[in-house]
Amino acid sequence: MSARTDLLLSIADDELILGWRNSEWTGIAPFLEEDVAFSSIAQNEIGHARALYELAARELGTTADELAFDRKPSEYRSAPLVELRKLEWARTIARHWLYETADEIRLAALKASDDPEIAGLAAKIDREEAYHRMHAEMWIERLLSTEEGRSRLNEAVDELWPYALGVLDDVLRPELRARAQEQLGRVLPEVEAVPRGVHEAELAELLEEMTSVRRSAPPGSQW
Amino acid sequence: MTVDDVWAALAEIPDPEIPVISLVDLGVVKGVSVDDGTVHVDFTPTFMGCPALEVMQRAMEERIAELGAVPSVVVRLDDSWSTDDITAEGREKLRAAGFAPPTPRPAEKLELVQLRRGFRCPYCGSTETRLENLFGPTPCRSIRYCDACRQPFEQFKTI
Image (tube, rainbow over all chains, first blue to last red; front, side, top):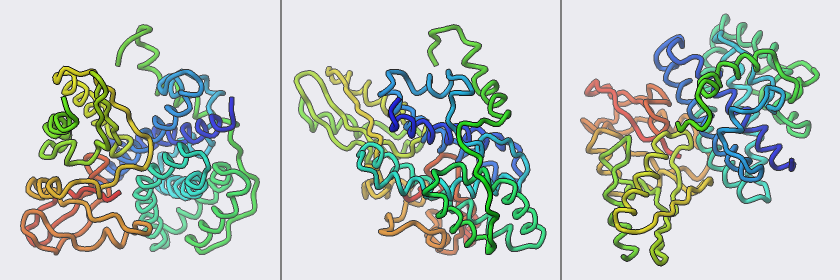
């Protein structure tokens, strides 16, 4: 597999798995506006995954659906940050903000790529992601504005920080640290990143649930 | 069959989710060419996760087939669609149907402060409005509230 396809699959897997995680709030978010927001963000992320899988599928001679649903858990390239199941609000917001910040840094690098397909798709995705970032930042401001919010957010960020670093390649990590520290107004610990390719147990459970309908259908079914 | 015939046919197809405007008003048709019996359409998606995209593509293929040609709709996966591509007529139709049209795409990065300004309410015209939610019932819409006429309304997101 080429480095290009490997990169496309890493990003597509991040977006698909996080899209699924975000959709877990559908119907049960703390209030209706957030129910709508997380459902809409999930829909966007899964749309981005589909476009990225389509580019990868062309090179691999397969389809976006097969890449999304028919691989073994060990074949996914997602970052462990997106795999964790975090149905607790401060952790959900911390993960959302850390991921969107890392994703902005990654997309900026891809927009400058010499590969016109990758640069073009990254620019398109980035315009939609701008809304996710504004949403995440609104919540960070809100949580930082009260003592309880600040303490719960900080605790969640400390727990997730090694995972957040693992979303990006080594060269892009200092930028994530600088941005996160600036927004939180504190220094984040020097820790080892949790790397891509080492999967959390939650990934297998997620894939089991996500693919259950597809697996239950007779081969060749049309959706 | 001419290119103009194809444009006219595509202009009759309503947007699946906001049927007051057509696909041509929406600006998603980037180009049309006619080559023997085949019609090529260069189609650029709005939001990538929008489930209406496949409906739009199928509707265009069906319409072209009705004209007696073989459709070939190519979907672009790039940054070639912006809400700036919605035609003036399309914006007016959106406003008349109760959707605030999108603001022009800013030259620099879009900031939350720009979206928190008081945009004009499509019902009463007041600018005493506020952002309720960046997200709405479809990926392309945000929710606002008008303090003057106490009516929530939707705004097309700027991208």
